[in-house]
Length: 145
Ligand SMILES: CC(C)(COP(=O)(O)OP(=O)(O)OC[C@H]1O[C@@H](n2cnc3c(N)ncnc32)[C@H](O)[C@@H]1OP(=O)(O)O)[C@@H](O)C(=O)NCCC(=O)NCCS
Image (cartoon, rainbow, N blue to C red; front, side, top):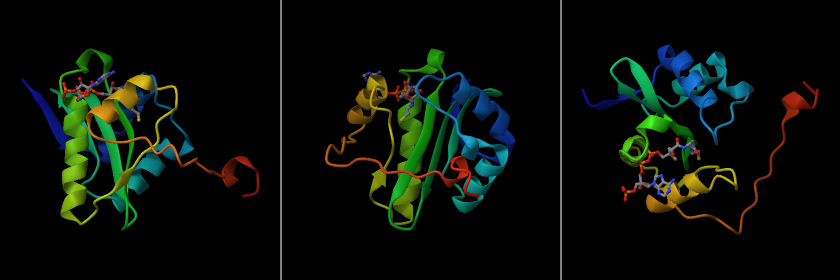
């Protein structure tokens, strides 16, 4: 049986979480809780996907947009399934669906030392933005709320 790319639902949560936790280059945060993912999928319907080999989830990608730009996050393919085009297929589904709703520009975050992922994204035509830095603030961890 081949690999199927399917829309992610919250029913996939535990398998997806397990895959993220077993994947180098992926960090999970409190926003990756079941509740957080549920909210994300409701806000961005039909944009996040899993790759399945039979019952098993072997790849995942989260995708959303803010009305102007698209964002791709937490892309992971199980190690033994890499270099078969699954990562490319997952990203293509995101891009296709965002193009259909008029989003033509995307951003994503990659850890600077994740050279393999950077090579992958380069291969898919994505470019590193050397002129940008990421600024973040996390009120939840400051004890302010
Ligand atoms: C990055 C990742 C998702 C790629 O998944 P994949 O299914 O192996 O990728 P694909 O097979 O679709 O590869 C697509 C293209 O990228 C190339 N590519 C993939 N990984 C590569 C690597 N490490 N180095 C060089 N090229 C690579 C492939 O050769 C292929 O090119 P081709 O179509 O010309 O043959 C996977 O390696 C992974 O899960 N890594 C760990 C998690 C991670 O770092 N995620 C990204 C966070 S931003």
